[in-house]
Image (tube, rainbow, N blue to C red):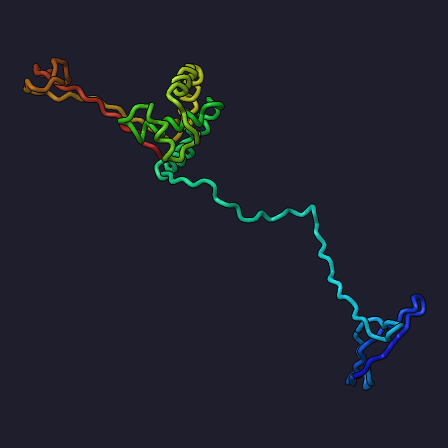
Length: 218
């Protein structure tokens, strides 16, 4: 191992290299490895080490930048089980699609109020503001009591009937209705439902009339 010097004819600068010899087995020859140490100061003869340059990373400004972590600024605990079930029922029966077609601007409000009225049947609609803070629902925002009244007023007869027609067409191919009526004669004087009537057997007794409706969906 030794140091050799080489002068650049164009610039006149002399560079010092660390020279290391080794034996090349493939070519069966002696070879040398050189490593630049620096340039030689012409006045003092000292070797001035060269600075090591790092390759600059190429940054493609058009490439999408991965977002960094975002601090949580809001957290909330909400119930989603029952309303998620209603969402799936609405999709399965075509309710959501038909409501959107008939009431494009208000169908989410209609669904949210329907969810509330089913889950909170004993509470007034004025309690919706409190309920919606704790539940995930289609509209996702509060519907004040005045706004709900305006919503009900905006539902006209034509749009309502169009919705029922759409739902009827969905059911007519797969749904069957079975309807039957009967009567039960009674001597009771305590039941207010027992009244004078006429049945198939022509019994001269007060009776209770019953109607039975069965819906079968294939």
